Length: 479
Image (cartoon, rainbow, N blue to C red; front, side, top):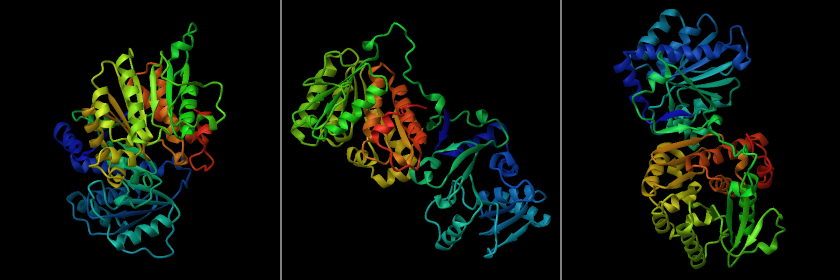
């Protein structure tokens, strides 16, 4: 996992104070990382001789990175600097003066005939807040529409510039992982600033961790003496829209659950479906159930949901090591906070909440969907609040970038694909999570593995495909 930080300025200060790395050297190394990237033909498969590079510079240190980049490329590329604002930061002014004395081409307006192999955004960095000016947006609109590979320095300016690559300096930053950022950052790369990254990131507790493929723990069967009971029993409540429960149960069966049962509720419509003989059907929670999944298609009739919740609470109090996944309709039930308080008093219990942002904002009314989508910091803050309230609970905040809260830690999955924007995708994830908990996974390993495999399986089927269905996803649950 990679560490993610909300306040990168603190790391830069640490590098300066603890390791005596001056800001000017950090700027030089940031520019060198971008120059090496542009000049490496094996990375981008672009012209090896005299590529045309446009660098857009602002007044701050992000602009200083751009001027330093221009200076490093001057005899290796056809370099043009578009100066949007006069340099004001001390290092930026020094880099600008060096460029002027070296004869770097600096312009204040783009001509219509300009054509570039690379467009590098060094306008505004991580410290920019507020709205971009209209005239700046018009310039960025033109650059976004232009041909050529687009690179953002540290972060796309105002999250408006649409980069193919973002080369962020020193460390992973939480601002790069909001839903808005996902549409503009492209592939994110981390550049060293003159000292090893492990040293640069030392001394400050990260705010989150970036999930990688190496963090997956697949439910592979390595015990030759195993039997079906070895891999647990997942029980999925089937309510008024039982198709969602069937999807969740099918996902659980396909993700390693030894036994899987659909538990009928009073208003279940299971009779409308042709159900696979792989799935069992019961009027009550089976005796050897190791994990319950409740919520997909359950319905919102309060009295019935309350009765189902009481059954789950009774089961949890009598089970040896109970595990429960709450999804969908359970997330909008008014009694959930009180139920969670009771459940979190039970020894050895494992609980997972899997809300999308709209459900999450209804569950915790102090946070609206727009804020959660635009601010990674808000998701981190909310996740930690919930897991402190409910310490035996993991919260999976489903979105373009999914944030997982457990204990004091936040984990981020960035591999979710737009093809998952289809009814039933969340039911698949709920079933997968339940299957792993049924197989006695730890809470952390269960949610990380389920979320990451869910995302990677969708990517394998095609990020932009429009014909993804829950059953296609279930049939391709693999790395």
